[in-house]
Amino acid sequence: MCASGIFQAKIPHVIVGLTRDDLPNLLRPRNILMKNLADDSGYEIRIETGVMKDEILELFSDIEKK
Image (cartoon, rainbow, N blue to C red; front, top):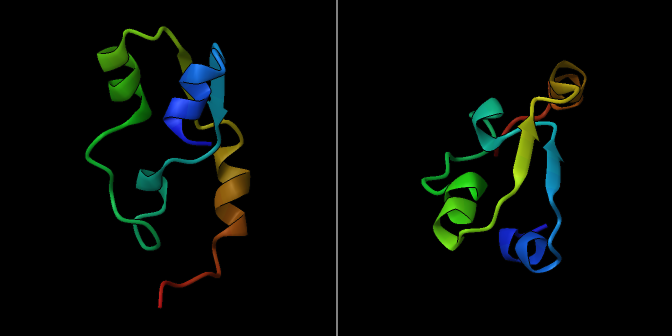
């Protein structure tokens, strides 16, 4: 879900399994994080990352960027 949709829906707590930084072989890094956007907009949100990270990384273990 995009950050603006999360803010407009007033979702107070977002749980993220992986970030782009966890998959550098598949995804490019981002310069602006959801936390930065929330801070800039004044929206108070709790963002929890790394939930089930090892299990999710296993799902991507055999995927290569083309």
